[in-house]
Image (cartoon, rainbow, N blue to C red):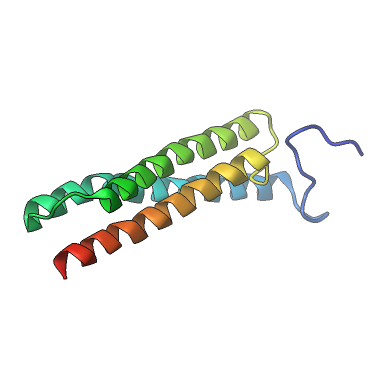
Length: 124
């Protein structure tokens, strides 16, 4: 059985189209949650700075950039899943979805670490 570009075979013989639809729906929900969290942390440093009168430095700028990268990567992930759904494949294992999902998650996680490093370093 020949595969077309950008598709992957089912994980096992019992995987149905309904299972793939459910996987896409779960991926979309998880991505929306991470977008919400990353978007909240885009404005959090400004609030923390105003409340605690902290100095902005390179750590918080890097964290902010990582949160923005996370949000942008999530849009790429959602667009990739939407394209997969439009083609009727419902493929969350496509390389576009995987790469953008990993970039989204790890840029958010690293941004969060940098944010708390900045916060703890500035507040003592």
